[in-house]
Amino acid sequence: VWNIVYQPVAFVVYVIAALGELNRVPFDLPEAENELVAGFHTEYSGFKFAYFFLAEYANMIVVSCMAVILFLGGWKGPVLPGIVWFLIKMCAFFYFFIWVRATFPRYRYDQFMRIGWKIMLPIALANIVVTGVVMMLV
Image (cartoon, rainbow, N blue to C red; front, side, top):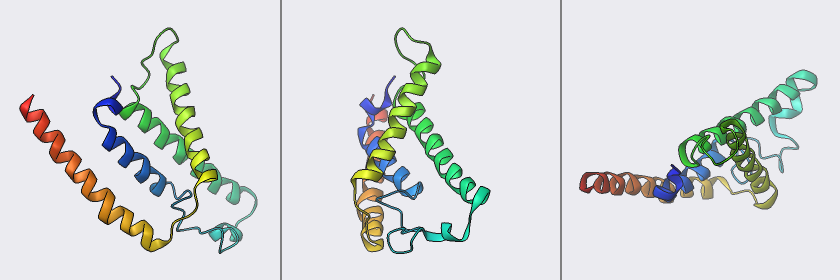
C-alpha cells in the first residue's frame, strides 16, 4: 500500500526534513559552499575527499530507500520483479534530490530555523494528533 495516499502531510514533512538532514541545497548550512569556496572540503584531497562525497551520496541513497519503504509502497508493483520496482522508485527519489539542489536557492540560517520550529514541527505534531484521532474512530 502506498502510504503517501494516507499520509501526504507526513510525506512532505519527511522530504523537507530529509533535505535538511542531507545538508543539501536549499539547507546546506554546514557547508555554505557559496561563501566558503567548498566548505570544510577544501582541507581534504584524494581518497579522503572522495570518501566525503561517497558518504553524502550513500546517505542520499539511504534516505531515498527509507522514503520508498515508508511512503511509496516499497518493492510492490505490477509485472516487474520487486527489486526492479524498488530501484525505479529509489532512483526517482534520488533524482528528485539532485533536481532540488539544482533548482532552489539556499536559505539563510534564520529562515531554516523558522521553517523547522514554526512551520514543520507544528504541522508534524498536528499530523500525529489527527492520525491518532482518525485511528481511534476507525
